[in-house]
Amino acid sequence: MARLPRRIWSDKDWQQIQRGYLPREMNEKWIVFAEEEVVLLHRSWTGHGLFAATFAPVDGGGRRIASAVVERDTERYEGTDDAYDCILLELVLAAIVLGEPAPELRSELVELTRRKAGSADAPADLILHSLLGVRNDAGPAPTEGGRARV
Image (cartoon, rainbow, N blue to C red):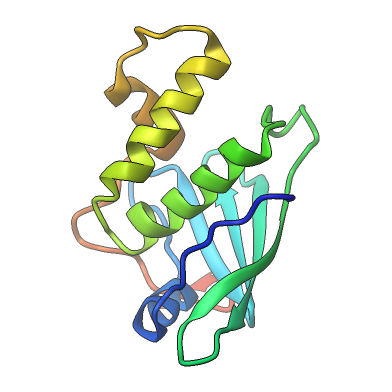
């Protein structure tokens, strides 16, 4: 991925990201888990891995995404735009894994999606639901090594 999120994730954020996120219902569309420094994001319905983001420590604390790869097989993912993928990657981590409202990222994703689809009047809620799904209010189901903790 040529474009990466610029965000510096706090040490607390990194700990939560490492715990991952497992969906608890059909409307949750992402599975997120970490294998050491690499965070993998899969679509829950298909199990297809779409992103692998490698995190690196930052001087002074926190982490940033140092590199990322995105699925480019159009049978699995239709994305071809690095700017779009950058926003989607950051938004899934912020909104789904960390439970942040992330209104700026949501707005940017809606705008990019509308431009990509050539439909300026597509409802924002529909776009966001189809791409992000929802986050269960109970919070993320903890994972360990890519498997649910029981």
